[in-house]
Image (tube, rainbow, N blue to C red; front, top):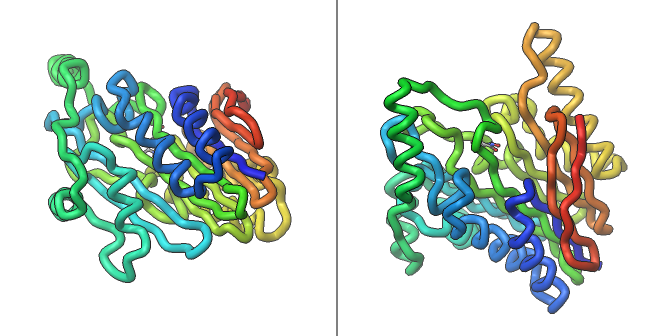
Length: 287
Ligand code: SD4
């Protein structure tokens, strides 16, 4: 059995590429990386990779991570500029005993040392959006206004599992701001014995509940992917409500070692792509 799940409609083409690789016998890591590269390389997806929306200073800074569920090793990139495919850099860093999480200039230098391509990640459209926001003196947009993270979880025929994330974070964010996406346990977690999970939404909230680790931990104790996503999300939203806050904007996906997938959201609708022994299709979960 192979299976793959990814966040948002925008990952459908990548999810299809990932599932066809898995069908051909590729490992979960290859499926995750190739699926995310397709989203990173598409300039019309303004929240990930090339064409990502800039921070308040007009620079596109990217966060990404990769986790191997067989070894629990991970790699991550924070606030990296000019790295064409942050997911590939994160995967290269995974497996290192030290220096597996790199930020800023160090991440860019590592990309060069691995022979990965650098590129100005801004497009005319992303700069235009930034200029318009500056002209309107617009502050940060909320997590879902033009801002989605691509997260992919995969299971291969041999039972291997991997997780990956990639994002340009929040539009008009402060320089140096890092969200949940490269933070293990918050934006992603993967243990091939119990399953994988990943998050999209406002990173500042997702990190408060270490939501991805929580989902995998609930699966370890026997919860289905759907129940684990719901329970983790409800625990955090109930806590937020008890503090007088609203539920916030958060969505979760999960995949179990037997190929079951699930999702939960605080949004009216959260679309995700998933395939299990077949081509990926888009599904929608509601709050
Ligand atoms: C972040 N979680 O940087 C990301 C943004 C996101 O849907 O996923 N938006 O906080």
